[in-house]
Length: 324
Image (cartoon, rainbow, N blue to C red; front, top):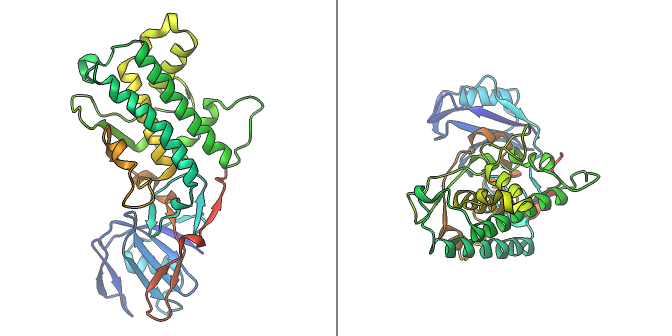
């Protein structure tokens, strides 16, 4: 099935009818068009938008690209090689339209990861009773801060390793290194998460993975570089175990939790995990726009009784390894 991402040149409307001279509401500047078995579908890219569809075949358009051009005015939509209804193991991504495939993640792994994260969050919160997290104290360092920095970075490493292993990443001869881990930055959209401390507005907002790059996969993460320095040579490098680096590292662990299990990472609206994280951290922004063409897209079917599109159920998703 063909998938095309397009710009809606007729925003906030689209065109329909035998001569494509009738307007319909389509309140999305960008969208995704899908060729189904019995119909063409279009959805706004907003983590699940209202579906517009038309039955096929129709003499007024030749193929999906032609329909997109006549309906939304984009002459050059971008084709995706994504396989509809597939979900990469332990890699959460927004949905271009409908469904919640991340529920396919192991709830056992989710709970185990949350227990570890919760312990680290508690330690950070206790630290704030002694050291006020503000601009004046960013460079404050010490043994208790070092402990939190080490635990948080080890949790991040554990998450990196788990994602690679579950997706059958080719094992190196030795241990995984940041040369392997850095490949997850774009796969998991890590660089677009911006966090802030919930109750301490004087502590600057930060993006833990923004500067991560393949040229310097270790040192481009200041907090991770500090972790390595103080882990291997405490006497010389204790000064790198700063409050700023510790907060950034715990924030990175939070991002990894989200990026594995989803923004709505609990089992439903009664989820008790989210408030615990939000008690300390809040997500300031997540600009997924540059990754839109990698969003998950559910299978779509035309309901033969009502003529309206229906989403395939979660059980219809295929869980696959990410093709490294």
